[in-house]
Amino acid sequence: MELGLTDRVAIVGGASRGIGQAIAAGLAAEGARVLLTGRDPGALAAAGDALVADHGADRIRTLAGDLAAEGHAAAVVADALQAWGRLDHVVANVGSGAGDASPTPGRAEWERLLDANLWPAVALAEAALPHLTTTGGGGIVLISSITGLEDAGGPLPYGAAKAALVRYAGHLARLTGPSGVRVNAVAPGNVRYPGNPWDRRVSEDPARWEPQIRADVALGRFGTPEDVAAPVVFLCSDRAAFVTGTCLVVDGGQTRGTG
Image (cartoon, rainbow, N blue to C red; front, side, top):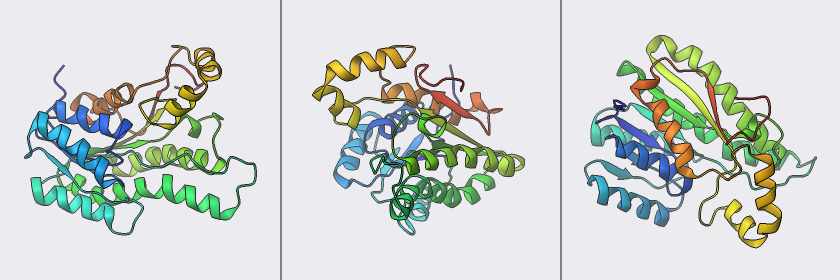
C-alpha cells in the first residue's frame, strides 16, 4: 500500500531506542526524511547511524537534547526546516513512568512526572504547528499509554499526564482541523524490547510475569516497538487523511471497554 510519505519531513521525539526508534525507522522505510531527537547522545547517534546506513545521510538527521528543556523543541524544528525546507509530521514519543506509585506522591513528584510526560509533547506540538499549517496540512501524533485510559498500574501522575495527552489531542484537533492539520494520540500497552523495564522484569522473574501477560492480554503476549510504530506511520500517512482527534489503542486487547 502506498502511504504517500515519500520526501515528507518528520520529527520523532524519544527516537534513540524502543518505540521511537521503530517509528523513525518505519517512516524512513516509507521514504520520509526523518529527524531523530532524544536525551541520550550516544544511543541517538547509534540509532541515526543505523538509519543512515539504510537510507542515506541526506535523509536522516539527529539532534540530541531534552524536549522538556527550554528551547529544544524550537531548535529541533528549526534544524529540520533548515535541512529540508519543510515540516509535515511530528511524533512526540516522550516521557517515563518511573516514579512514586504510592497514593500520595506529593506535589514535587506530580510536577516532575507532568513535566516529563506532558510538557515535552506540548512543546514539540507548539513549536511545529506554525510550520505545519503553512504547508497546508501535516500531522501530529502523541504517544500516550493505556495507563491514561484506565487503571493499568504505575504512578498516579504518570497516568494523569498520559490521560491529559489524549484530551489534548482531541481538543487540539478541533482547533487545527480548519488548517488541515490532523492530531491523534496512540496508547500502547505493555511493550517489551531488550533492556527496557518490562524486559528486565520478565528476565528476573518469568514465572510471575509471563502468565500474567497471557491472562491480561487477549493476544497473550507483549507488544513490540514495531507493533506500535506501524499504526503511527499509518496515522502520519495520506491513507489516514480523514482521521483526527482520536486515540488509537495498541495493546493486544488488554484494556477493557476502550478502543
